[in-house]
Length: 138
Image (cartoon, rainbow, N blue to C red):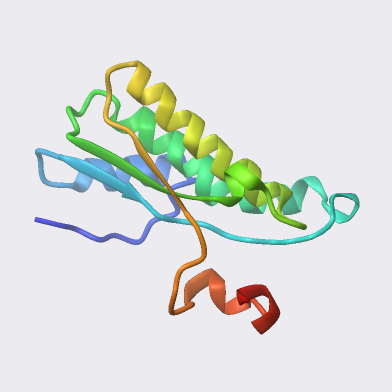
């Protein structure tokens, strides 16, 4: 059975309450959140970077810590090729995705399930891709 729930997973208390409300056993986590706020490094502020890191990195860390002892069979995160290759103006987004990749490696090293899917650009643009210009998509 799959349950989709709305929650600010970067808010540890809210996430903990949600996880406590779920039927057991909890068998898998799929974390697919993300925010982009592109800009050259000199224009970035701590607040702008935090707004990009929170939904990906902070939420993934909380999910990891709060489910570590749950006996999950799968823990999947949606990362991005930007974490591997970077992208013009995407320092925060690249950092958030690199963090996801490293966290999944840490989980695997600890004998826990962890899979980071470093997506490239999706065909049939949607979601964050809606912010791309035609030149970006090409």
